Image (cartoon, rainbow, N blue to C red; front, top):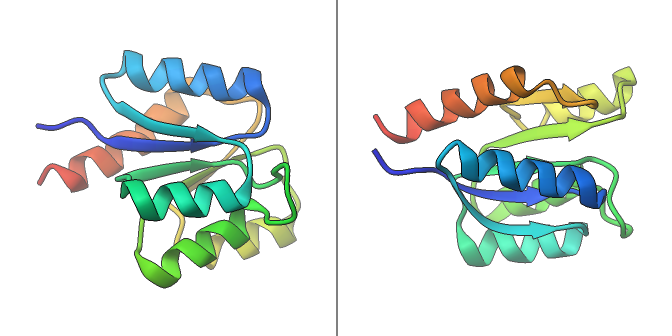
Length: 125
């Protein structure tokens, strides 16, 4: 079974490095780490990841949900949101993107890995 190709979109450098290290330790390929919505869109469309780990609040005017909506206009790529935003409006908006999960910060590693394994199992059927 091949590892997942994962794009990490996170504007906090410590969280981004933690996610990158965790994904590599679990045997997956991190194809990019970006901190802006426009970079997420461009990277996703150019590099064709199997999964996107997406923060919702980013460093530019495009938030994570808007970036995913733009990506999905061209290709459906599964997304797991990782965010500090826990309000109902954000959850409802994220859910419309057919997300795999929304995980709140601080990240619980086992929860994240369980959701990534769901995607891994589907990709490797």
